[in-house]
Every structure is written in structure tokens, then in C-alpha cells.
Image 1 (cartoon, helix red, strand yellow):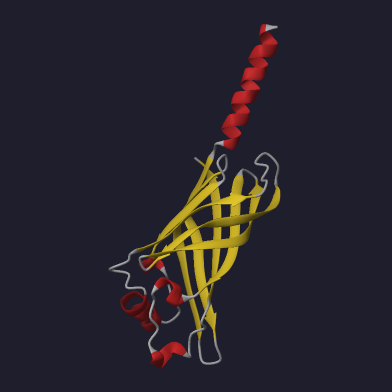
Image 2 (spheres, rainbow, N blue to C red):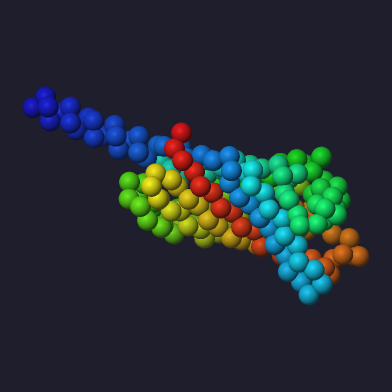
Length: 180
């Protein structure tokens, strides 16, 4: 009888630990893209810190705005100095949660819905988007794409270049987290 009780306790503890594990990365990816007939704009940041609490279904990421790399140096300079004002607003953050079932002990791709608050340029807005979480060989891989409008975050685009930039930017987020 004692052996059965001990086995049950061990199973319960293992189950709780499996569902309260934190998955983290410091090398996540966030990119944004704008395509117009005049010019394509692409910026990528591979220094994204992301945390997923699989037990509570919470997730968060944070990155430095100056970490975005552009194909043209002048674009990067204008982005940091004129648009995002990265000295004044250095961080971009997201805090939220996901809904949907993800089986952490079974490799597979799981469709989830992510909902939370995105802060850019000192302005916080609610964001909701479909995403995927993939469990693969002990890693938790996340992928989402959504669109944002710069004016929703009080990012002013001068009229001289307004036609060169789409009204909505496509944002891509990719993370590859491991347990900590």
C-alpha cells in the first residue's frame, strides 16, 4: 500500500512539474516588413528575450528597439531617431497568455490563440492573434504573425515618406525556448 501511495505522489509531483515549467530564450526573433511599389522595408531583431510559462499558459517577450537591423543604414538611423525614438522608448514588450491545448510531453504542432498587451513607443495596445506552439525534442517553438499600424502606437510617419510605407506593418515572431 505504501508503494502505491509513494508512486501516486511521485506521479502527481512529476505532472505538476511538467505543467509549471518555464521555457526561455534570449535569441528569439521579431521582424517587421512593409512592401510598397516604391520601397520595401525590412527590419529584424534576433536578441529577443522570451519566457513561456506552460503551466499557466502565460508568455512574455522583451527586446531593445535599437536591436533591429535594417538592410540600409539610413533606414535604421531614421527608425531609431525619428520614428521609434529608441533613446526615449528603448524597449518593446509583450505580456499575455495563450489558449488552446499543448501537450508538453508529446512532440507536435499545436494551434493556439495569443492575447495580450503590446507596448511600443510608450503606448500599450491589446493584440490578439493565432499562433502555433510546437513541442519538439524538449524545445517549445513559437510562431505568430500579425499586423500593426504605426499610428496606433503614436509613431508619426512624415508625409514625405508616408507613401513609401504600408499603413500596416506585418510583424513576425519566432521563438525557440528550452526549459530552465
